[in-house]
Amino acid sequence: MQAFADNPWFRSLAAADAEALLAASMPVALTQGTLLFCQDDPFDSPSGAFFGVVTGRIKLSILHPAGKEVILAVVEPGNWFGAGPVLDRRPRAHTAVALTDAELRTVSATKFDALMQRIGFAQAIARQVAQRLRMAYGTMGDSALLSTQERIMRRLIALAHGDVTLSAKGRSCVSASQDTLAMMLGISRPTLNKELQALAKRGRISLRYGEIEIHDTARAEEGRPVKT
Image 1 (spheres, one colour):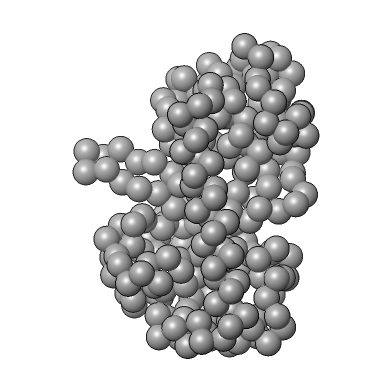
Image 2 (cartoon, rainbow, N blue to C red):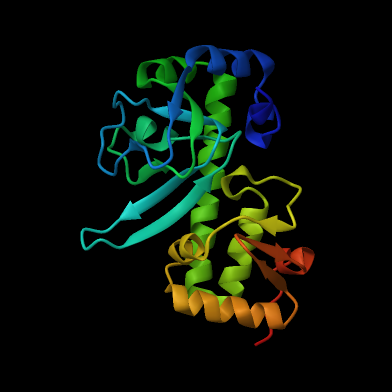
């Protein structure tokens, strides 16, 4: 499966561990808008416990009882996710829904536990959890310390690198609606639109239909502040 072969985390697995993971997984097809699992679902629900995206995109989000939604990540092909609740035996902390038609590989909790007996696989899962925890801490820090424009640029850079993929090579264009980007940042759509227009005027990005082109990826990656 080429999508997995191109993914940095999957490539880090020893060949035997990668083969064991794929052998333990089952194919599942989702149509756009289908729920994979819901916030507070048990970790060992029938839908599976650990998931790999073959095609399509999966949205991970937290829903507030009042109806507001915050998007945590958009999981692209090649990525595996869902290990946390299986490790700590607690319910799902967020909801996963197919943004597009998608093909997944799903691993049950029982088979995931068996895979964790393999030292190499367990170490890879530890690295994955550590990387995503680092990303979460970074997002929390950005929310407290950066301006809105700086936060937008940081998020665009993350999306250019596949978000949770953490690809070393970033894309120049990001395909994301303004609604999705606003929910990722926890700001209103009008505020996002205003700041995107300002960034475009400064030559940092170009706004196109359904996508955003990033002009100064290297500078943004270096964490230099956005002049306002």
